[in-house]
Length: 296
Image (cartoon, rainbow, N blue to C red):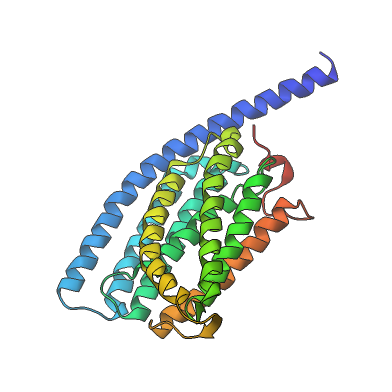
């Protein structure tokens, strides 16, 4: 066996070992999510009971979920204990990224809901948080060669979202500017449709788009449609007014206006990150090492 054949054999062994590790990790996570369904179900039932009893201050809810979240984390550590040794594979990083982002999003949803003083979640913050969640999950593929087209689409869409989140709470796009706003929305939708096509090709070496991510896309689409149902009549009304970008703060709670401003900054940073990675600039694959980020 010459050196080239030995290298090929070694690569094959590495792929087999990595695939076996990934299969085991995914099986374990399936069990973990079933356990979490029970613990989270208990948490949501407890939340409902507290609401029915008239509790509105954060204290009881924080106390309840301070017990639920550690239980979830213990379930992960226990069921993944056999996977603790060695370096995590790319797939394992994907799953951890999904889980941690979901937890952070749930905390943010609760915080925004409390800031608004609402018993029922307000749609735009939830939509923004889901979008941020999806982008964070997609960001886990930054180190994989061949993802450049998808990252470029993400970067362009991020910048459009930053423009919308940053201006709509403060400005009225009147007259001809209403047409510009409509064009921005149409282009963003076309970018999203193109992304749906491109990501299937880009993710094929990874086994395709993850089911959880597809479900998130569906929720985002539903919520985005609801947002457009409110935005389109407003844009049509603006189109009949004299042309100008007029400072006319939307009649929304100030905490929501602040949250949208923070989200505009966050999604703009996400766009810069995606563009940096797509241009393959130094350190663009961080935190995924080059060798480990390669798709089998």
